[in-house]
Every structure is written in C-alpha cells, then in structure tokens.
Length: 417
Ligand code: GDP
Ligand code: IMO
Ligand code: MG
Image 1 (cartoon, helix red, strand yellow):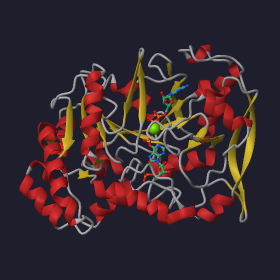
Image 2: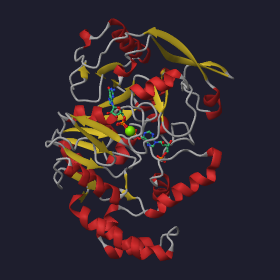
Image 3: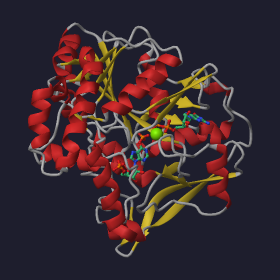
Image 4: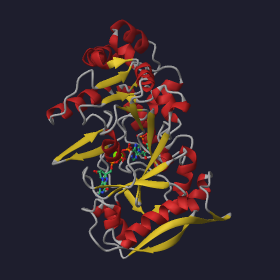
C-alpha cells in the first residue's frame, strides 16, 4: 500500500505541480482533494509548459488515473476549457484517465460575482482573492445550498436546485440552467463515485498521490486567518476531500520553496522589499500562474515550516527552487520572531502578534555557482549541501528531493520513492 499526501508548507506556489508530476511517474492515481481554479500549477516537460488549475498534475502520464475529489470546487466551464487546452497540447484525456467526483461542488456565476463584491466591500481589509468564486462556493456548500456535479447531469434536478437558490437572480436562472446542463452533458462520462474507486484501488495495492492545492498558511483553520483561502489545504483534509480513512495514508510530503513567497494580502514577516525581493522575483519568475500578479518574496521562514511540519504531520520534505538562490553571497533564514510578547519560535496564532513579528535571522554563506544542471547531491557545492542539511536538522525532517529547475531532469533524488 502506498498513499502519499503532497502538501504546500508555505503560502502556495511551492512547486507542488512539479513535485507531483515527478512522483506521479511511479503512481497509479493522482487525486486532488481541495481548492479550485484558484490554484495554478506550472509543469514543464521537455519544451512544453502545461498550466494546470483543476486537472490533477498526474494527467501528463498515460499510466496514471487523475481524479478530482469531492473536496474540490469545480467551475465546469473552466474545467472543460482546461481539458481542451491540454488536448491541444497533445495530452490524451478520456473518462478512463480523468474522473470527477459526483459530489464535488460547482462554482456558479453568482459565486464569482459575490467574490468580487465582497472584495470591494472589504476595502483596505481585502484579502486579494483570485476572484474565481472559491469562497462563496464553499460558503454555499456549508450552508447546504450548493449545487454538486451530479446535479448537472439532470436538467430537472439542476432547475430545482437553482430555483430554490437564494442568491440567484430570477432573471438569470434559465440561462444558468441551460449553460450548466450543457456542461453536464460534456462532463457526464467523467463523473463518478471517486471515493469508491480510490478505496478499491487502495485495496488492490495501487500507488496513490493525494495532491493538495494552496499551502498550509492559507488553510482556513490553521493559516493566517482571515487572509486565507476557504478550504483546508493541510494533509488532514485529504481524507475528507477524497473520502479515504486516515489509517490509509502512509506518507505526508511537504513541498517547501528554498525561500518564501505570498500572493495577495496578509502578514508575511520575512518579506523583503528592496533588492532581494527584486532578485528573487526575477530569478524565480515569481508571477502568479493563475492571476499573473507579482508574488511577494522574502527569506525562508523556519517558524512557519516548524508549524507546517506539526500541523500536517510531515514525514519528508521536497525542497524546490534551490537554484534561485545561486547568485546570493549570503542567505538569511528566519529561526524565530521578536514579538511584543518576547522571542518565539512557534507560530503565534494571534494574527496581530504575527503581523508585528520581527524575524530573527541566521545567516548562511551562499554558493555563488550555477546548480541548475546538478543531478546528484554529492555534486552540489558544499554551501548548498550545508543549506539543505541545516533546514533538515532544524526541522527534524529528512529532505527526500531537491529541485533545481522547472524541468523534470532538474531534480536531485536523495531517497527513492
Ligand atoms: P504550485 O502552485 O505549488 O504547483 O507552484 P507554481 O507552479 O504556481 O509555481 C512554481 C513555479 O516555479 C512554476 O513556474 C514552476 O515551473 C517553477 N519551478 C518549480 N520548481 C522549480 C525549481 O526547482 N527551480 C526553478 N527555477 N523553478 C521551479
Ligand atoms: P496554488 O495551488 C498562492 C491566495 C490568494 C488570496 C487567498 C484567497 O497555485 O499554490 P481565494 O481565491 O482562494 O479565495 O484567495 O489565497 N491563493 C493562492 N496563493 N497559490 C495558490 O494556489 C493560491 N490560491 C489562492 O492570492 O490571497
Ligand atoms: Mg501555484
């Protein structure tokens, strides 16, 4: 049995897509368990670049079945477009390769409208959402007003759900029924009981990755609330979002960027504003895959990572984008915060304390060498090896893979999966 959960340990965009793609080579199933098309994963294979938002990052292998679990919120128009784009790029997609949970909730036009209205009302308190209707869709799910994928398969049932929906403008109902029933017709062959299939696959000893979107610090419970997304990216949510029991999971892989980024609003203690921010943004191409917004950049934060290891029960770390640090003479790493309550090395749950936290840094020497073609740990410069060991030692978690570029070959395996 092999069921691994892949989870972002920072504020998203850690390179989960690349890591899932690398590990998926030896997998039978990749299951996405939460989020929606707020996610954007860039996966580079040879000279082709794939942008994935809803389709799991296993789709690029013929041998992998990709599943969109019940915990995901689906904008069916966006999903169909993404499938078409992938097909145009030469990816074969049929109902044997892509499966969609019949009980996943559906993003409606009204959710997108509410998302932007709420952002406008929040003014200086705005979250900087992706504007994809994610929050309002999850709100309807919890309020028991949601429309689910199975509802799209019957026009009558869809009409009943939408006519009773308090947020729908009566004038819009007919056109939404038409459009969404049309999406249902296209997606019908893919819609299924994904939990049943996953559990059968586990019973047959198949190898499975459960893929999270976003990151631990954007988790609605454990992140920097209210500057979070409206779902639970953390590993525990994989059970709910895929319909699998906790005892079935045997590994939790945290994906960690060698520095730190954040998109949207909210506190970020190790954020840099001058030269270092410009350097990381340019060298790391730190612009959002979904919204093309420039990402805020700063140093690695071990307080955040210590928390992520604890909250997710991380058993190993994949360290990404180490090559981005290549030209720095000195690399800073935050080990603790100075706060009004004193020095802390555990993440303070009070957002006010976190907002005022001043990072306490260790300084490590850089390696000032191009590592983007290195494929073996022994071949890395000494200071790069030391940086990896330093992180692993402080967190008490082994680092199983180091990524030194966006391509598949730009990967150093420290342990076999
Ligand atoms: P995700 O949302 O966690 O899947 O991450 P994104 O795909 O949004 O952002 C990560 C970006 O970094 C993508 O453009 C990747 O192609 C790129 N990337 C991934 N790993 C590496 C790496 O090791 N080095 C460099 N330079 N780029 C990487
Ligand atoms: P991946 O999967 C980075 C951020 C938004 C905003 C907050 C809430 O690519 O790592 P939402 O639209 O979810 O209500 O926005 O969450 N956000 C992300 N930031 N990567 C993501 O996904 C994100 N998905 C949402 O910028 O601050
Ligand atoms: Mg991303």
